[in-house]
Length: 487
Image (cartoon, rainbow, N blue to C red; front, side, top):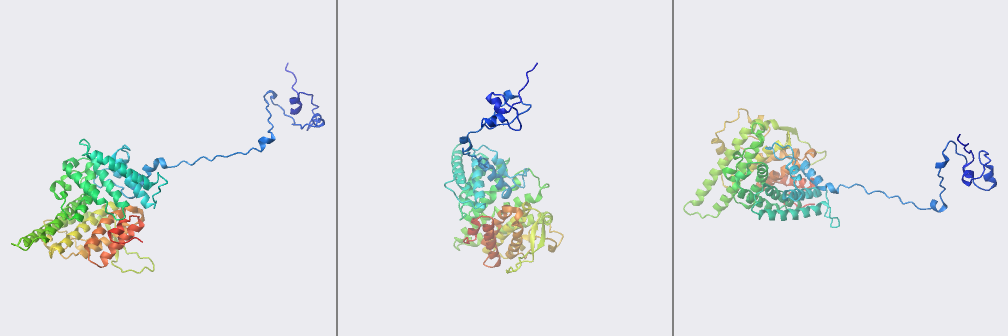
């Protein structure tokens, strides 16, 4: 038989004295001057632990520690690469099966590789530039500081690789040099440092030879590098190895066939024509140094004129071949002007495109045609377009010129006509949803426009557009391209 459990108050039980069990408080505790702790029912008293805090404990300060927030510094390279790939270089190339930017592929390489360092170098600088992040010496993890560190690391790794017989021909050296050139372009307000790297890319590709670029990723890197190589040759007034037949796009087999993506192949054909232009400049410079002896100067000019007509014929043939495709990708929209905006109305409608990638083909075509017309004028070649059309074997399109949104070749086409088409396409490329990719596609055509057009409305329009890109996309070198001081 279990013993009767006491029903006394907690205090009397603790003192081990008999409780009078008066309610609500024990009388015995009150007479003894002790505070009664009351009663507990249906409890196992052997497990009761009563704690009465001391006065000192109640006054003790309590310090609450707030945990530090979880930062993203460990993912900074991924952030830079993703930002660059999605806002600027968001395709590997229209002739590649991959829908992602080549930047993403470089991000999966070893952090010690030269291509990874170059990709991080350019991406970090571009991220800092567009977010207006100034260098912070006190913060070694800032984007601009890290970009410089990656630049030095990439240069060191590239120098080591190029001096190693087993590594110099690696295709990743090509793309690393290409990206270091882009780093120089966006970080240097003068926009001149990229020329050295572009020249280095050209020498490296030429040493590797065309056969070494027949497979991926080397083929993509070659196609990406052709334009800066040609632009460098144009700036220096000397011919480039890319004018050779072995380096033309028709010599390579791409993952995407002409039937799958005809305008992308046409774009590369237009670049093939542009590759001939540095040789024309070199020839024109040499002719200028000749004396009028034995008619050599006149013969040289005639040879150059013939080559210019042939190049224009080649370009017009590409344009006629592309007419059906280009008519599907371009359309007109009314010119929009802000209320109260006062400016000369240069055209009534703007040209918009189905997508930014397909817009490059007509923009490249206009750019090359502008250069050829300018050279024809410099060589005193009148009626160049008419002569090119007269020898064109390609059939003329059956529809009239008025049915096409974009310019068709004609015997009366002028530099003003071509500059106008470039200008009408500017607003499309600067739409917010295209981010910096659209603006980046405009830079070279606008640069060509400002270089080839005489003083007047189109030259001024090109300079104003470059200044607009410099201000809205933080690409400061664009202002220097047009000799415009930043405000």
